[in-house]
Image (tube, one colour):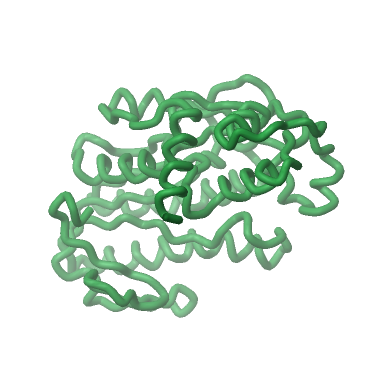
Length: 287
């Protein structure tokens, strides 16, 4: 953003110690520093508790839901007061909106929502975002896929067993993963900010979803490691992860047609190219 000439402020639970202006909010107490809105014409809302770092207890489920819905409602309540110049609100959402699917069905932005836990989270999240649209503010919702990054997230977790020769597909291995390179994920948010024609929901995924088996094979090929173990049985993951095992055992196949039609040009359309780039960045950071 800074490289493109935008002025950026940060709103979070702790202040940043860098050149970017930083402001505090307290979602639980429904409080926000009103100075954060001064001179701001767009908000990019990314807040939300991680869905994969802790077991899905009832308490954790509430935290996942409330962190998204309540933070959005706090912003909406402040914007409703009208003491601001915000014209654009861009919110992260997730392809979990469509629910898990075990077949070949392809989901577009007009597809109906799913009925599982993550689908209910994203529906509630987007509903809160839509209230902001009722204020006359342009709203864009980016339903992000599985972001591949050399710095964290799911990719290092998948790569680790492959590196140590214990990599294997999960479950059937046929579940689809709708992925996106982190650079393209950021690029879509930038386009949503700069393109006034974009409005509503867009899938933030690469054009070529792949199966869990194909991704595991692609990682092994990129790392020059063999795969010789059989797939990990579903009951093992369910024993270890409980309900959260669905994140590994199930997926969905999501279309990028709408964001392509909007004019976004992907840097990485195929997972092999994305993995090569991320592995090279990883090596560069270690040198």
